Length: 304
Image 1 (cartoon, rainbow, N blue to C red):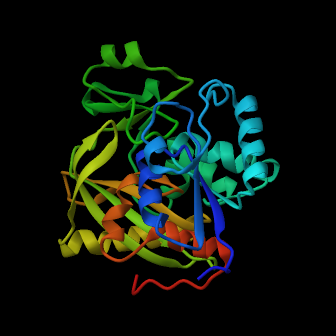
Image 2 (cartoon, rainbow, N blue to C red; image 1 turned 30 degrees about the vertical axis):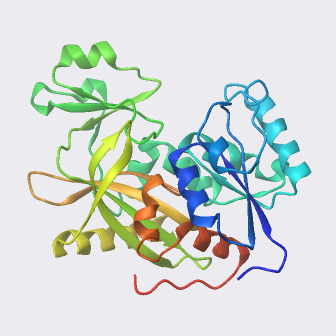
């Protein structure tokens, strides 16, 4: 439990699917007062968040200097203590400017956020402890390597990924400044929701199979029961947690390699996901637990 005075928490952007899940996780807490901000005027956040200021003219996502000033002023006027990032796009922006904003950003360290935002860094660092996709330079690609995946180096829930079947196609679409070329992995996809405590211990992990996704967002999930998958996910979660500095809720995505059935890490993100309701309905409220971790309140979640 928190102090008698309600903690003021801002969700930005609050209209994201993750922002909506944070609202449903915390809206009935008397010790938490939720606020929402969003770059769009016409958004679902207007329906959910009672405490809000929406102004598309003032919240231009493209003008980060203006956006920073706006968020900073909102935080000061509303006496916000914590901010939940609602999308990958704003995790690093908020964390980089945490001191100037004047509120604590509920995510991991800036170094971890930078690693997670770039697939090339994620694969370089975590490839030392777990399986990651093979990354190619354009000049190294042979015809036998196809199909390949061309994807933005900047992580974004699979958005912008393209399957390449020929060298001509790859050369035509490849942008050396923005893209990375990776091996194509076509198996089942799993998302693993995790929680790390203040001392760095992994307190919780829960895998779910993504059965239906839209625009990179998981909208239908199913329970994972295969013992082999569960064991490999557990090992991978501990390996990732032990290799980079994580705090609070985070998640990672893996795919099953068709050739041998092993799991391959696709990406990580130091934030809450839209489908963490999957854990909440099982009794694990990850937004609330992340707040507890940030407040220094001891947290324990069964066995992990």
